[in-house]
Length: 415
Image (cartoon, rainbow, N blue to C red; front, side):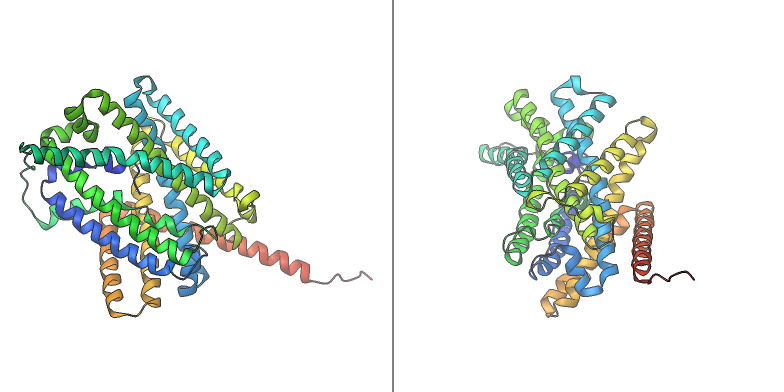
């Protein structure tokens, strides 16, 4: 969940003033409602999110969810790879420039593809290491906030913007983008020990912890930096740390932010490989996607996911396609909302208790609101990509059916 978006989010939230606090609260509640629904599905055991959806709505719905999840991850991976390179450029200016950022972004994808080809333990070990590093800038801001409070020093004023439903809606849409990612815990296929217990704990525990850290640290930045400085800052978290502990500490913070994006990219690439593998197993993508090496590693699915990510990075390597980069991020968000929607509906069908259905209802309302926040263009393109996925699946099934029919026809001897 913790990638790169949170570290630049104060720039967008700063001008919204107190509305940002309300936005965080609504986003956290909405994300937790969705997480609760996905966690309730996870209690049924292993098999991946496609298995949960198939049990509720059948194989076509299961394919649509997995496909939407897959394309959302690939789009987000391109953004995180570029964010990793951009953060490194602030530590080492010689890395700067479009070509340097593209090279580092592509190199990050290649390196993490190799990491994931070594297996779940290697990928998970790297994730644990990067988590320990990526939370340092966030916790540092909270610590500075506590130190300022203890010393009796004053805080900066929030931007003077009225609290209105429209401003809160804008803040909610912005903060939601930083909270996505907990759904990746549903992706592994038969690779999690005691999944009925582990997956729900991962989803609910992760979403709660990250949401609280985000609320405290993002609000802390807004209380420690003037609103006009936040609006023009390229690295607001690093700026806060520099004021308290100097430029060297700020450089270390920038490095930790680069590690955060790199760690988020690693987690996404693991989930993407598992999703491609699941679709290959089911015949929704070419059977080669289901090929595995030692320890059941889906090496073809990992290589395909990495290759598509690199192509997206290269597509954003020129100024002419700079607008595509922002669009790709919105497309990723719109696509993952389809996963959330069907996941919540599946949970609604499975769990009929009154309290659970209240939570599921809140989640569905929040998802509708989030579709609105993603924008009509991204929503429509995500529908187009879903239709493309159905077309690919239909063609593969048609080819497979023709092959089986040909094998079943007995040979007729010629007179």
